Image (cartoon, rainbow over all chains, first blue to last red; front, side):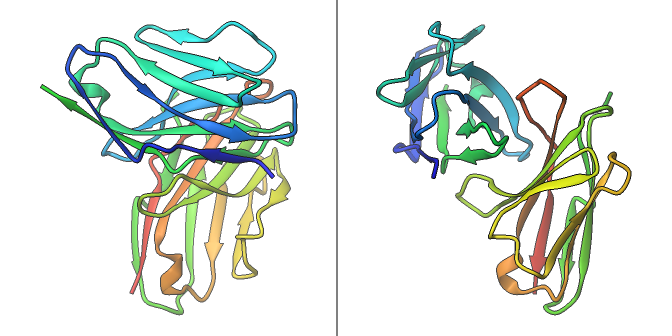
Amino acid sequence: AQTVTQSQPEMSVQEAETVTLSCTYDTSESDYYLFWYKQPPSRQMILVIRQEAYKQQNATENRFSVNFQKAAKSFSLKISDSQLGDAAMYFCAYRNTGNQFYFGTGTSLTVIP
Amino acid sequence: DTGVSQDPRHKITKRGQNVTFRCDPISEHNRLYWYRQTLGQGPEFLTYFQNEAQLEKSRLLSDRFSAERPKGSFSTLEIQRTEQGDSAMYLCASEGLGSATQYFGPGTRLTVL
């Protein structure tokens, strides 16, 4: 069974600084997708970034980048130049070949002005 | 395209009553997913459709839960004989063919008294 673990229930970062959110997962599959979703207080989940397991290059989206370590089954999210609008709950998610998604328990990010 | 919509946004009901939620996916998205999210947790997969066919159901989906997507467009999730443990946010997400990325609706918050 696939599981996703986010070991940091809460994180904080100073505005304009960099923060890294951790995620590990367990799977026996070799082909899968990994995602980071953001859920602001309004509760609608928004896709932040996506990584295909077969790609060695780490995905980047503007200030957001990932460190994908396939052998270690690790998928961390780095937010650079943190902004007040980045404050939210962040969920790591895994998608298997059967099109099912598994989410971690989330990391609540606070941005300090 | 206005994204995934869900109706109602909030529902308060008494224990034992039946409730039905609706999800309208992004147009032409052939996959539609239902999740349940409780406070402090990530979304938990309930079921998903490819077009009108229900392809996967979680064991979390008891006999009191039923979902339909009769014409391959909108979907409904019905909970019969609601229990207090059913109180949660019910999220819908849709995905286009070959996309591998889900887009979430705002959710329906259910409170069972």
